[in-house]
Image 1: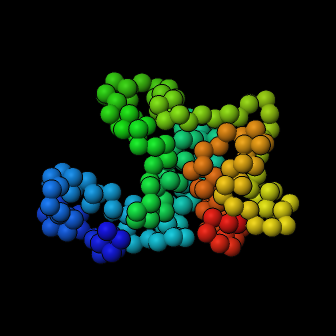
Image 2 (image 1 turned 120 degrees about the horizontal axis):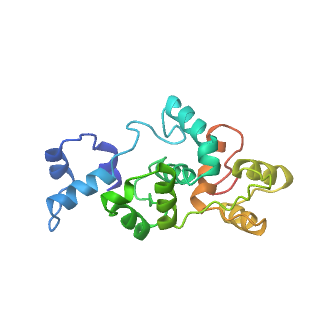
Length: 197
């Protein structure tokens, strides 16, 4: 499947059926496989997983009060899990069960005040913001930068997860990984080995 990911670029259902078709799979299953193996930003590869204009807009949203103070922040976690899209790696920020639960909600679930809708999505995804409005807290990026500045040795992703937990932050692993990827692509930190910064 790895080689086919790199060569398949057509959005034609007929081409997808011919390219991804396997014995025993229905046409719908084949088309779903083709869709899941289509890059979000065609032609982009890590670390430039999205065009700069899109990265700028994403960063602006991610740093906005809406994303920082409401359940809209889960959109940034979800999107970071999708980008960069690497074939064969899971692309779910919340897990398959939550993804299916969210995707199969009836139409009336999505109607009403957008903030309340996002609160309902966050609840289904098990996503929550633990920030206390009365406290000044470091952003995830600030925490990472401060940690690396104070450490004399590289820090692994699992160590970052433990450090966040020990500091009283409940941060999804996908958010930590997303911030590490962003900081690396911006040149603010360096990846010295797989999952090691």
